Image (cartoon, rainbow, N blue to C red; front, side, top):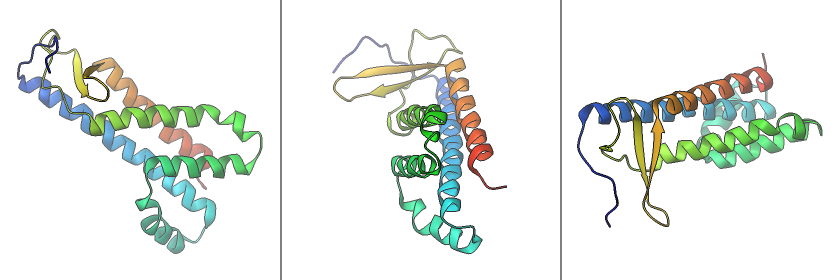
Length: 160
């Protein structure tokens, strides 16, 4: 299976790719933990019971299961929340799709027609091989979106 990409190994590129890939996955973990805590806190204010629920149940749930549970909880609080928080659930879905790409798609060792600071590429093989390219500013934007959403969830839904 041959495509039009010229492959070379570039250690700076690999290091940059590992940095951004790791940082995106790591920041997403914090976002997922925030959702887990919101779900837990919606059922109990007892810290010990909440910790038990978190470690026993929520740590076994996929992100999508947590997102669906979170949606039911937030929409259940008030009918107007469906409109008020629609953008949050859209953003959660989009960021989860990006997170899955960084977690599951193999790194393209390098793409020869990119300069030193261009970004990184991931290989998507579903249906047909495809390179997904991310420029540095796009990677920084993804990180900012994750952090902004984590902050918003903490402000809107966590008990003080």
